Length: 114
Image (tube, rainbow, N blue to C red; front, top):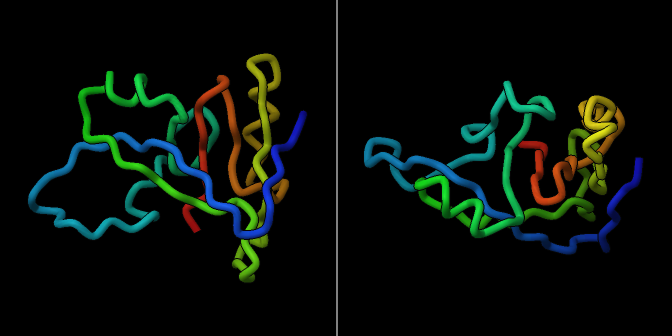
């Protein structure tokens, strides 16, 4: 498997699709957006494909994250694991292997919520 490295504190953008309701307000926290049943395990699922995001019919939010941060984190994670279709099963171990997330199916991301 390959890794995708970034400069320290380099920001990356992706798209997150969500149904927003007036009752939840405007303050969203990463842990509120985490999916526990996705194909790559627990994490925040995003896409790099704007057309795919818009086709969901949901609200599309731009997510900005830093895979490799200069600030110490609880997990100590950095970089993204790149999983191909034939090694997606191995891609599910991205958290245990210390990655900030996994890129799969070419444009899909699963990110840590910490």
